[in-house]
Amino acid sequence: MPEVTPLPLSGYVVDVHYVGGVPTFITGDGAIALGTAGRVVKPHAGGILASALAVDGKSVITGGDDGKVMRTTADGTSRLVAERGRKWIDVVAAGPGGAVAFASGRTVVVVDGAGKVHELERSRAVLGLAFFPKGLRLAIAGYNGVGLWFPGTAAPVQELEWKGSHIAVTLTPDGANVVTSMQEMALHGWRLRDGQHMRMSGYPAKVKSMSWSVKGRYLATSGAGVSVLWPFFHKDGPMGQRPLELGGRQELVTRVACHPIEEIAALGYDDGMILLSRFSDREEVLLARPNGSPVSALAWSANGLELAFGCESGAAGLVDLAR
Picture 1: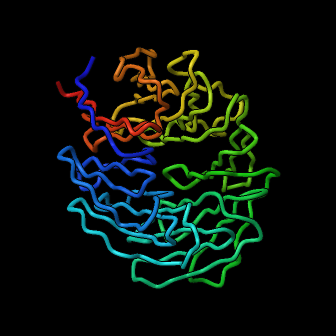
Picture 2 (picture 1 turned 120 degrees about the vertical axis):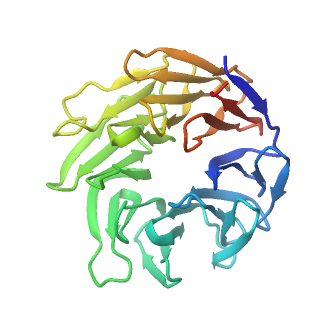
Picture 3 (picture 1 turned 90 degrees about the vertical axis):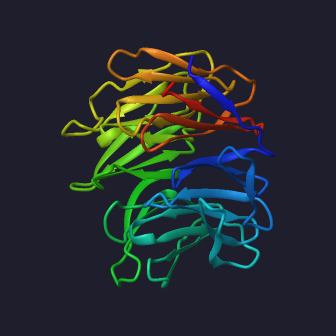
């Protein structure tokens, strides 16, 4: 079993990222813990509700219940990106060229790399945001589908419709497909070249974690007693294909993180266990033993030799795979 360095934190771990190469833990009580030396900053007056790693990996974007969107770097410096009074900022996304998107209720705001602000009002609450990998284009998930928006242009929002509540959204790394997680315990996708729908169902719980494998070949997901990985390397994507299943246990997979270089994935469970599983032969390695608290955050270092994790209880740590 690889060596684990424990890092007890003060609250629920909302997310974890490698910011400038430094493992950075985001907690619900408003703290950002940088590295292993106990350095903590609090850029928000209240709790942190959402976070996203900047595309260049040099900063993390956070939204809080104080109505602020903040950008924090690895040295602990924080600066204000935007402020919306007393509105809760519970959805954020980071895009190309330093762009930042966030949402509160029905309002979507994009601050582009030049600092210009673009605003869009939706008919229903916004539940998920994701930038396309190239250009300033944003996918907006909510009730009955996804809107595709080019901020700063007169182009109308392109609507991708499917009945139900879409609670999160992601795009294939080539920008060719849009995939959402739904309240109805399923995934739904749209192939943008022809509008073809992709329905991925059979989950016993909501999918709260999605991670693309290297080169976007698979989309790994939580929400079952295995991690279900949908293949996207076929002509028609996952349609008509059997998904790959990794890490079967009686416990629910709560978090997934695909390795940045190899076709392996870290799987976190609702009892705190973390497994490493290889796609080719499903071989498994135990990374962390159960601690009784659901895994809520996972992130790989850029070289794939270290895994940072966090749990709902505040338990956290670093797994060193180089030793």
